[in-house]
Length: 120
Image 1 (cartoon, one colour):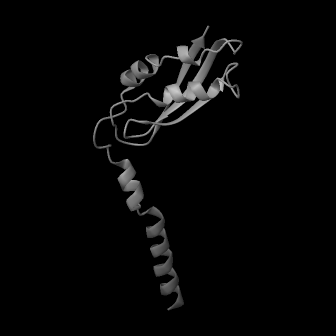
Image 2 (spheres, helix red, strand yellow; image 1 turned 135 degrees about the vertical axis):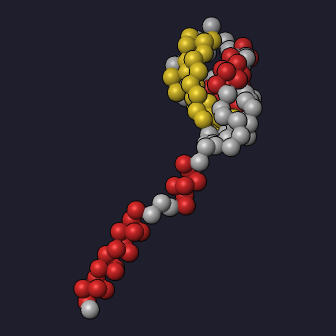
Image 3 (cartoon, helix red, strand yellow; image 1 turned 60 degrees about the horizontal axis):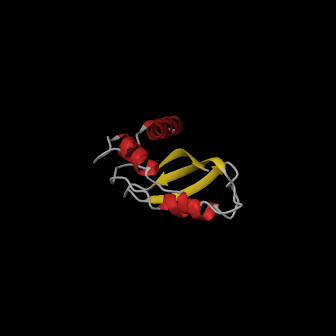
């Protein structure tokens, strides 16, 4: 009798281990709605004007930002990650300028895009 109980328990555990979870099924579904529009993101980031971020005696040259778009299309986060602007007084201005970027709403998770820029 004990063997029958052990076998039933083992079969039950194996069945649980291989049963697909509801979360896995949900993630496997094709996303509903539009996908992230890379062209729109590129155009939006290219239109950012950093002229007002240029200050006398401030850093010059190339820099790089990582811009994270939320599924609603708004910018969720901006990180200045390369160049002389990192932790400089100009960094706040650059972040504020890229915060204004926008893309059409999309389905799925937030998307982070890198963008090089230059202030001369």
